[in-house]
Length: 213
Image (cartoon, rainbow, N blue to C red; front, side, top):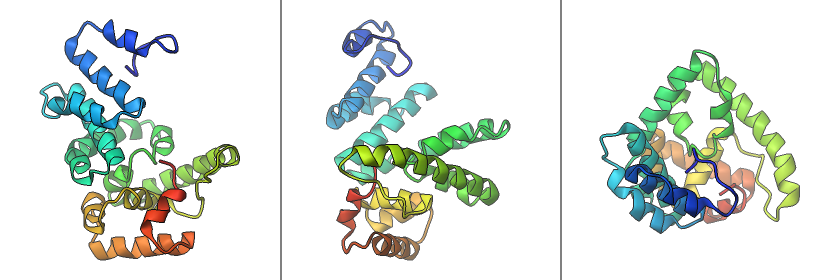
């Protein structure tokens, strides 16, 4: 669906006109995801998680991951993480040759820590440049977003802390976050404690008041 053009209010009709049944199914899953129907999204695309067509599979992977994050099912969300990691790694390898960093900077939050997993340890200098970009972009975005909404997104956290915070407030356990991020459980505990201290809160379920969801 994201690759289609249609008039506002005509998304459902645009999907019906897609002749390829498999692409239409993925588009339907996208429609459910973007219209906040996470359960229907999962049911629609789950059969494509092992599809031979890599583009269909990766589209299903991303939808399945983010929809299950919304549903609070961290185990299901992590089911496809290896495919997602491989996808981002390949994308980074292609983008790096021309220093195309902006897409990774702008979508840092949506990547849910995947950038940290794939780039932070392997290329620390490049990761630092990406982090600088994330900070600059997010601070500019907050200046527009925060005054116009009832909930202000925090600017107190580093990009790595923010990624952990987003997972922690979605009911991921420290063990699950550690496995996803490639850290030890103790390291995750340290980061979560630091996040709570910076935000001046006493419970991790209060983190959601400070991050964009």
